[in-house]
Amino acid sequence: MKFLDQAKVFIKSGGGGAGCVSFRREKYVEYGGPNGGDGGRGGDVWAEAVEGLNTLIDYRYQQHYKAKRGGHGMGKERTGAGGDDVVLKLPVGTQIFEDDQETLIADLTEVGQRVLLAVGGNGGWGNTRFKSSTNQAPRRANPGEDGEERWIWLRLKLIADAGLLGLPNAGKSTFLSVVTAATPKIADYPFTTLNPGLGVVDLGPGSRFVLADIPGLIEGAAEGAGIGDRFLGHIERCRALIHLIDISGDDPAEAYRTVNAELEAYGDELADKPQLVALNKLDLADEELGEGFAEELLAAGAKKVFTISGATGAGIGELLDAVLGFLPDRTATETNAVEIEDVPEDGSGDWSPI
Image (tube, rainbow, N blue to C red; front, side, top):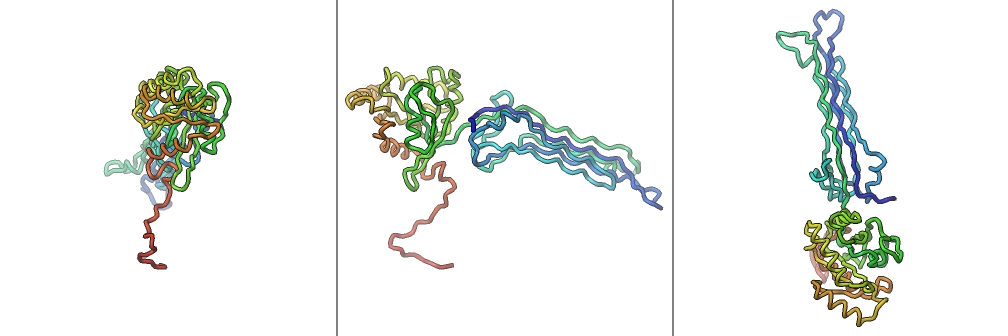
């Protein structure tokens, strides 16, 4: 399935049904009076966060969503049927914006969360509603109200516990494939990864977390260069960031400063998130060179530097253990887990088969 993190769609709620002009026709009843029913209410347009989706690709091929119109009123004071609602099934983490792409309507962060986007029009009144002491046979009825319509933007921001970032060809996809069961495309050239990816790191019971991999960042990414601003949006919700730096690059310290400058420019407190700096591809250099680069990174502002190798797995365990220290007891993969009460080690305590 192709990945798409942004889409523009048109929504329209259903209009209300028209009221009915009708009179009671019955044998031996000379003045039956009005009995026109009201029109039905138009359908609403809803957005709902569902499980199992991680892309907006469906909204590239269908961009117009219109709810059904309410049924018209009928004689014998019968009210028209209400119009069917339309529900946009969206992945968790989707933000909904107005057409200006700045006004936030809703942020769907939990499975089952529903938001009303457009309200259906009310049904028109039938002529029964207009009967009065001075007008016993009204011949007027109201048309139904029109539905609401507008264009909206859908923008997906992945929900993960930790995020991978770095310059192109820093070894992020290789790292993701080693620590998770994900199978991203891996090649020895920049910009191999074109779409964000997710994987679950399993370090044992109670030690699982979701890791997000975004394409490599370049200078000016925060302003949209290489659509880097959209990529950075996918790590906004992460609690910790893993910054991978290629040890075989020209200047690891400059690479560190470049990425952090983009985090500062992007805003949304990205630069304030806990950041674990790791010199990757240790298998291509000796330990002495790695120690020298680590000192340069510490001088550039890094609090601690890990030396790892995505190819051999060296140092990865220590790095992942450090990531767990920044995560809550229950991560994004364990929010549906059932809490178990503590049981005394000696097995004592009240027990009942009931």
